[in-house]
Length: 426
Ligand SMILES: [Zn+2]
Image (cartoon, rainbow, N blue to C red; front, side):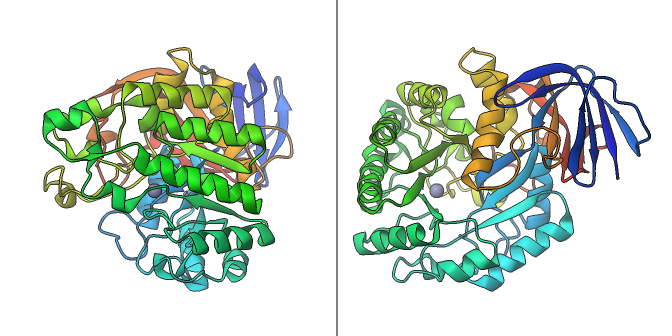
């Protein structure tokens, strides 16, 4: 199938150009230029739209196998396509845990059959995420695992994380680390600050995240392994990573749209949908995340899409599980809270949502150019709307951004040359 996108503004990490035609065929970009003519199966009018390279999410939870009442690979990848994603890395805390070749293969195959979005499984570091025994990294990589993580949990034992780092280095892969001192967190639910006190809810201090981040940076420096710090939320973590990078430690990191868009004021009404881990922090942390994004300390925006059912979240903020959905608001939150306020520009969004995550995964993509994969997102970057439940494609609705005014709408997603989301047809 061939597609011709007419008269669009192309937005790559290093250049922008208006009035471009893009011809897609055979799963790749065939030609780009002005006034491309010729017979194609479909012509798409790109007038007024921006074309970004297909987004890649380094961090999400698809809940399949095992928790498909929350989300499954079909509903999750459909929601991802609606958010402009052409590939998503799914975390291994499923049931069973993605610690076997069979589970990894199941995830990839089910996503391929659904055809909405490529799924790149992240296999667990330890068997059953129990922290006791390493998984078979080499076999899991052969099955299609793109990285290793016990996300949801830290790797507590020093011997275990050091062994994992050595193995990752040997095999040329990387570890995605959920940094949390569980003992220090205790019964903490939200960020440990004035707002937690006001609401009378037990807090999670910044140090819960920062001390484990510091430990793993130290070990990465010692072993030379590539570590990737997940969902960076505090001023201190951003600074630790900035300094480590300047020393040449092989550390990369991501932060989520919620950490640069919101603060712990959101928990004052005890909304369980404003509860995630790590928690929403204070304004100074939000600003530090923005600065980290601006100076390149933070490599990528990753959603940490974490669906839960209405019933599970309806038990009050203290008992409700951690996590919010994120595929469908990631782009709009980035437009609203990074671009519209002048922190970053359009090219940076192409870098943060596509170029860098593709590069980290050594995946071909991240740029709209002749010969590159036909992974393209068409967006109306000026459309304003109030985000409402009827907009949500995901099975789950747990987001604190309902009722918020957002700017920026994904209109169409094309993955591998195929239309995977079309808002007009929706
Ligand atoms: Zn995590």
